[in-house]
Length: 292
Ligand SMILES: C[S@@+](CC[C@H](N)C(=O)[O-])C[C@H]1O[C@@H](n2cnc3c(N)ncnc32)[C@H](O)[C@@H]1O
Image (tube, rainbow, N blue to C red; front, side):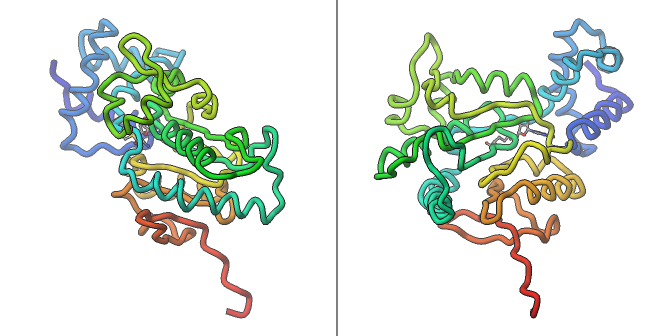
């Protein structure tokens, strides 16, 4: 099926306006490849027909389906390994020590440490974080701290992807990518052809549809924001707007972690970067003293 230049421009503009994702001229084949199943699935005769159907779909379902089809959802458990190592061995102890110094009450269900996985895709990233918190609390004497004191929010632009992530089912190939056998045995249960994340791990994560190109200042404050392998799809102006909002909702002394090929160079001067263990982390730049 042929995607005309005009149809390509229409979809490209829709994707840019809706998701902030910029698509280069040479990516026409990709849009064609990813949208063709949607054209067939919806019983349309052409890409133009799909576009017209999308415009008259007031439910928003078809728009979501198109965005889901064109976005790249590549992910895996403990992707890149080192950010998770840094999180467990450096960031978590620091956040807990800071809390103790402030006399935070780590008890009951007080959600004192808040972590956001922004662009969580099919859920491997937030579940990896939940597993590590579990391991961290289990392997050390952390009196009075429990998983209930942590809140993990996982968001993605695609309602369909995020609804699937919330169910916590993974097939054999997804399980084989990044998970130690010991973690599979401990944190997953086999259900038919799939592996299901243990309920107590699942209940540590709250899933929500959220478009990063819209305002998200009201979602609350976070101690750690993971936004890995998401900003790469946006142009610099969109990246800056998103990162400005991260700045507003990140707690002082909080951490922003990007993907290993991403950086804030030329995007924001509000953060300073540092190497923590092997991971580049971003923290809010401290204001210069008055006499500087
Ligand atoms: C490549 S995956 C990254 C998943 C995970 N963070 C990781 O590093 O493994 C990128 C995700 O960003 C999501 N995404 C793309 N545009 C978005 C937007 N405007 N708002 C929120 N999420 C978006 C996609 O749906 C996709 O699931």
